[in-house]
Picture 1 (cartoon, rainbow, N blue to C red):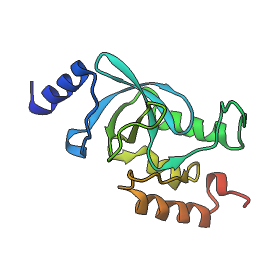
Picture 2: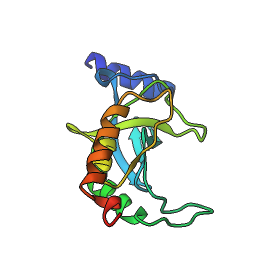
Picture 3: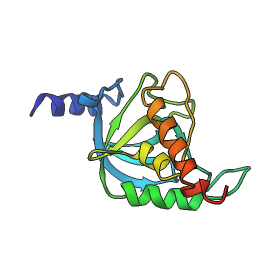
Picture 4: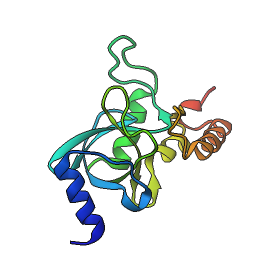
Length: 156
């Protein structure tokens, strides 16, 4: 077993998520797409609910707001990008939110899904310190999507 695999096995055994850098990021298959910015990923013997860092998409199943315009489209695009794929989870400073969800930058190959959702105009930048590693990239992609009237920005 290689060093990285040994570390992931240990993390899975302990049920503990440690702050990860891209070199030691967690990996696993996506087992469910919840909406445009939340997925379930199998990590070892458990499934984690993962919330994308730095972005927000319109709601599909909100208890008080209901479905927001663009929510289905954002969820569909997210599904096209990650459903059934093996993803790499890059954590930042804070690994969990107040709801216990794992917070991550989600990668499929060389594509950061968080950034791709913003680039295509289906997510807005929502920075919550201290998780700000890719904030400048997200803001640049959002400006470009708005200027090109892509996704949610079409017709605005």
